[in-house]
Image 1 (tube, helix red, strand yellow):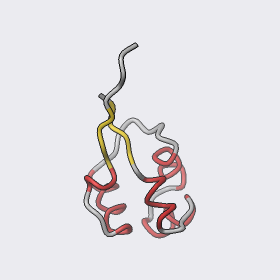
Image 2: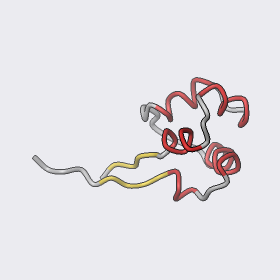
Image 3: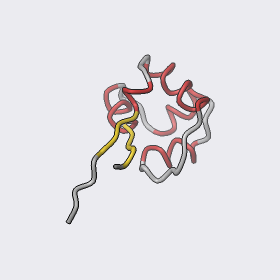
Amino acid sequence: MVVKNNLRVMMAQHKMNIQDVSVATGLSRKSVSKLYHEISIQITFDVMERLCDLFECDPGDLLFIEKESRK
C-alpha cells in the first residue's frame, strides 16, 4: 500500500497553482511542489492543517491509500 495525496485535484477544483497555494498557506513553493508531484516523503500535521484550512476539507480528503497491484 502507498499513501497518496489529492493536492493536484484540490488545486484544480479551486483553480489554484503551486504559487497560489504557497502564498495562501505560507508554505514554501518547494514544499508545495513536492506534494503536488508526489515526491515528498513526509507531511507534518502543520502542513496538513494549513492545506485543510485553505481547501476547507478534512485530512481524509487530501490523503488516501492506494493498494499496489502485484505483478
